[in-house]
Length: 248
Image 1 (cartoon, rainbow, N blue to C red):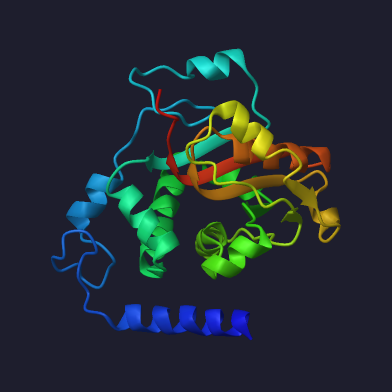
Image 2 (tube, rainbow, N blue to C red; image 1 turned 60 degrees about the horizontal axis):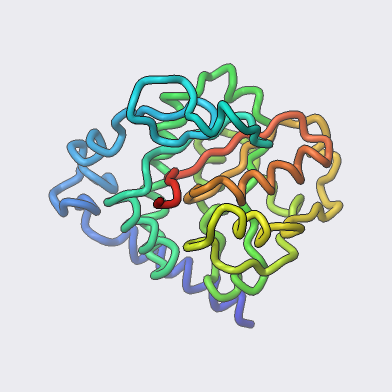
């Protein structure tokens, strides 16, 4: 009964959000029936200098960061809409923790525009599936939804790339990654993801893009990428709303 009530709450929330006046979510000025006005959209979609491999922000225009010159990631390329800072951090927190789903719609729309601007049509046509980072069942029940899955579904509709949601399972209820060192994050994620056996044939030889909301050290998406490669996936990329690093 509980999952049904959660689904009804989400649907009612979406209906109420669509009945709200058409004003910008950020500055509250008229937005011509869009989620944000053109001025705010233009300011949020500015190009960001970043590593071409892991998506870390760079101060200089160079192709790769120091980390990627020294170590290998299991994924091939990571694309992030923005650095983890306001207003993105505020929108994400309201989306995830207070169920303001309209913020998720806005972030998905901005990420889609960023993807189509930075990823070629040829490359997009080669992608087989989008795979949202799975939540553990208990966390999914507590939150009522998987934010990565909602983002993936929006991207799927616009870019016509199907979503896989049952191929990988999060079997281990990990501690929150925030505040942990890189080594502790890796240990926290050890054996966290497993293949379910479902849709296994779709993974073999495929080009999969992992969808997540925030990537910090990359430990989560790297662990998931390794599991995918071990099942026979040919290539794994990552698309996320925000990319950040641990403070030193």
